[in-house]
Length: 300
Ligand code: NAI
Image 1 (cartoon, protein in one colour):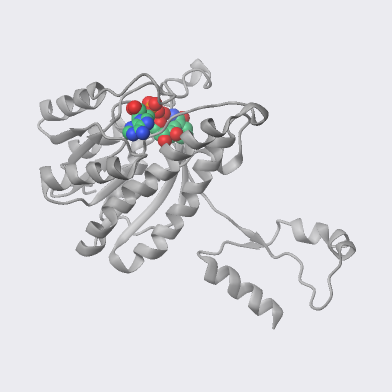
Image 2 (cartoon, helix red, strand yellow):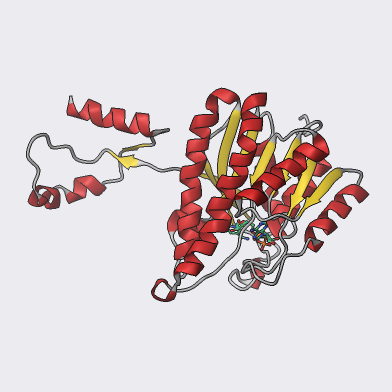
């Protein structure tokens, strides 16, 4: 089997000073990609002051192993920061092919006690940051007719999690963002997918039981990211859970449901509730067009 190489490709990995992003950056560089290692520094809550230290260490590791990388300390959550991250790729390597939106912070709090600031700051890094960095890269990807975008969601977003209203909202938002990027990128050779990982990092070390630390290494997430970022990947707009050696597709499905033409009352809804919720038969629309078409057909 041929190796998946990235020679001649340029990748930006955000939040690559630690954890998953670090592993993605090392792996892509080890396979020949030129990498912008972005990281703002700071602690897992986004505090602690900006520091370029962790990103520089990753770049040093890549260079020592014979690879090519530059560090970038900008903030994904501001338009200027996002522009500077992409510009770092253009300045150092002349182009950009791959965007791995990975940077993230946590501000967990039960919903009752969550402040607007805690909500906004998490949305800003995960959702707005992925929007801004992808936006800064988009015209480059479009103009060259090629691009790979991998966004980082979370099972907490896909399925919900106590104490993470801000994080879950941001992470599910990334699903909508990614699917729309996939639709808009289709005719320009741009593929966009979203992963929902689980791995033992500083972000999760106090929530994942220590017994699983060995099996949930970051090296069990990076192979999927690497494949999705490769030119041989033709898949776009999909969602994958990944971690501990398991990779699975997650999809948004619509049950066959219940259709009643003409007048419809709340009592009708109550009386057909089982049919509405019955998951034995469903479709998985690829886009809004397919979903709406199914409704129009049912109405004919
Ligand atoms: P981590 O805390 O080790 O890495 C996140 C990195 O993002 C840090 O190096 C941090 O400095 C950087 N960062 C934070 N805000 C930034 C900003 N505004 N601009 C640039 N860089 C910034 O955490 P981990 O676990 O590696 O997380 C990576 C991604 O994976 C995150 O998006 C996280 O939400 C997601 N994720 C991780 C899971 C896990 O089990 N570790 C589970 C689900 C999702």
